[in-house]
Length: 549
Image (cartoon, rainbow, N blue to C red; front, side, top):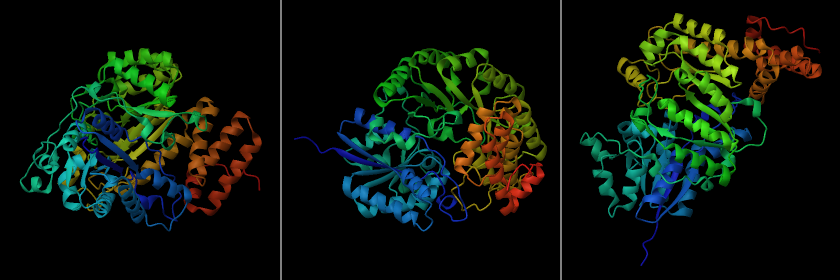
């Protein structure tokens, strides 16, 4: 007699703080989010490696949050709605296990509500959690979420497979090295990693179990906005040897880098193209260039696939030279995000502990520019130990090097990072009970770091670098600049600087004087009614006389 299939429902809580988006005083657009790659990997591994037959479902609540934000409704009880979605999914699917997969601190606030809803819908189902957040904050989460039965430390493929195959699952939760329960916490248990040592052992991911249309707007190259495409992500490696202060990667994947074979990477990408219509490959490795020769060979072998490639998660600057930039261009890489973080050698080497020298940044960007590859840059400000002169160095570096777009973040103490430990040990976290930190809000108060000033400065740097002193405008690359400005305007219709610099690009290029006038007028309307934008306009001497009443 065939045994009944083991059923597991994967629940992905929102990555974002709902209060920032469903608020009548805000007009924020929900950021794009990537496919649930980790859950897809679990799905493939369980179905391919478990002795038991396995059935899965995925409930990604980010999709429901996006629909709510797009609807502009502010009268919604989101927690109740998310709980209802979980309960309805459980009542329909009747899973034996519910696995809540959480990546970021910002998902903490949802965990107990979702776990409680799962228990209410099916008291006998085991409700477990995994991912970056639970891995790094297992004790705190089990204490805060009484409806959770257990948490998995690090990668979940092998521990979850053993759980589903167990005759008595509770024994696995209590005794397996990678699972931790409240009883384990009481005994002082420290959960350990169980890594997939050979990533080629993970069967091919089945992207057909999700609607890829929901994950088709993460591209950072805004020149292609509105064009038909199929974005898909791949993680060709796991782990990172570095210990950057703000990063929690080691708590999930460890410091030893494990890599798919080159043949497996190429086969996966070919399959993604043939079966799922891939046109834009998002390589989301934490350290793609750990093995530079392997990285180069992958780039050489994807040339014939005729796809576009982006690196949205940040590439090591030291790895980029003229040869790599040339390979990028040949392989279809249109845009690379550079993991720079600071323009101060002191901050890079003594605070972040990043193996990067400032002198390497300009040559890398110039190599990319020579080969027509756009460069984005990630900057983090507000780290303990960083002083105003260090932040000034960063601004000067940004203006001097000239990136195509800069992403300015406030430092956040993510669970599992050295930064969290430093801040917790020294009492640097403002509102310590607020667990859902996000990168647009600063909550570190330390010598030289005032959270209100850091938030203000982050936005000022954004306005200065991306708009007032936009590098593409300076070079006369108005078409590229326009696409980026328009992207901001589409997301934030009341962004005065976006309208102004769209108008400037049209005026300077002579492309469309009528559109220039229209955007100057919109700029004038915004600063007439919004004192903050009026102040910024005056600060940078933006000309209002170009508007025509």
